[in-house]
Amino acid sequence: MFGPRAKGFWTSSRAPNCGSDYGALVAGRQYKVIKAFTDYDGDVHPVGESWVYLGFSFLPYDSGLSLFVSLDGRQEWMLPMQLIPEEQEAVVHALEEHVAPA
Image (cartoon, rainbow, N blue to C red; front, side, top):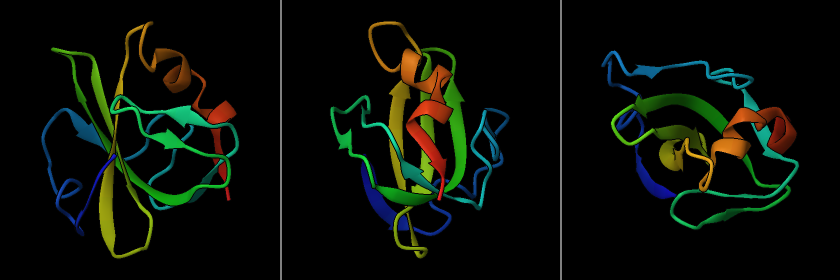
């Protein structure tokens, strides 16, 4: 997990590979982790962790998915994920099993 960065650091991008809602995640809503998962950097997101989901970026070259969140309402963090079977693909395809609206 990278951050914190100033508000808008990642989410101000209007590139074609960026967006707001992703699967079950709706930008601007508060979520909490209900089943622990590990991101691409090896950072564990434990049950009870809470953040506001802000948006995403997807880089097809390496199947890289970045989820942008705010832990404090003032700054942004990036959760890196990789959509391949040996990495976080199973977590991403079952996000609603790992995070739920708070």
